[in-house]
Image (cartoon, rainbow, N blue to C red; front, side, top):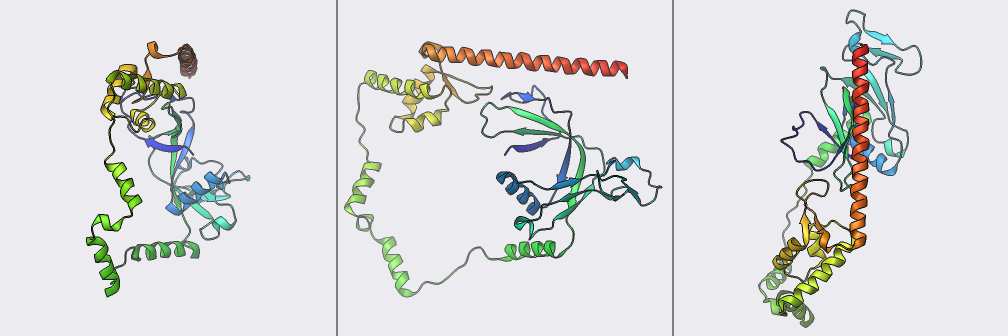
Length: 324
């Protein structure tokens, strides 16, 4: 499931750090921004994880409520079945969210009124995939309307509020008193020397962990051994963080390994592989260099494609402005 974030005043190009590309082909799409209760948000998340339908959004046929005059009376109606049959002007009920009936919704309200908030929003919706390590961000659209999901004051809603209050008042930690026998046993375990609390196997294991002998070897021999291990690591994938490298080499000294990694690798300080190490070209195999060239060619083709799409969108906008 993609994570969503709302940016109101994004940083300029000079103030931010470029870590990826922004896919802007959907930035002109209108999006509804809805503020809802936490239990409704938890329901939507559980449904999305299971791939089940979230519910039904019923919008009026003409959702631009502000175009109606305040002197027209109290209500307006939609003739066909595309929207809500009756609605009020001003900031009244403009839309309805209906949840599917089933076991998941038997304890929560199944219908919510969407109340429009005043003012024209100036927000843009962005999303990114946490599993994507390229840093790509997608502009999902602009916020055309802001709504507040209002749950009906029925028995289900009152029960949810009552459970929330009871959980907040419930003690999460309790204090008890030990009897004399348990107290003496606990005190004896605390003040007893460590050698008396562990077996011979546990003592030997502790010594091996804390007093591990470091077998010194010649610098050249150690360097050759670690270099071969590093080449095997980078054969798995081309980009690694240093902490990931140390996880592959847990028995090697950290500082010496870091010095060797800096000699063999390039450290990316920006771009899609920010804070990652990559082998220098002179240490790569022919297959690794060919893979790098293909990757660069693919990125360049994607960049040219996006540049052409951006130019086409700009030309369409200019033609529309000239005809207008």
